[in-house]
Image (cartoon, rainbow, N blue to C red; front, side):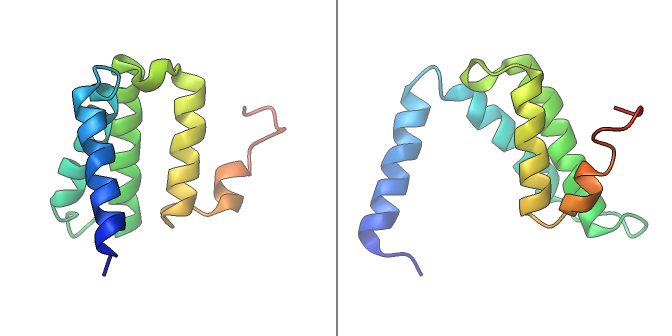
Length: 103
């Protein structure tokens, strides 16, 4: 598991985030995704689809609460990175329409 010092640093980072008024939007965005992911996916929805739903809804919430002052563009780039990094979406699928008339 985690080294005690590393765990302490993570906890203090969360405490700083919670004490800072700038940190609350991130808590809201991550909280929304966490709540969705806390529920099991319906049988008809693949796990990756459920993860994409959580990322999508968190991105929409992020567009409203604007964590870090980011607009929708940077939030979408972060969402694609999270979707690819978590295995919910392949990089090929995420980038397949770049450079086409569809985008």
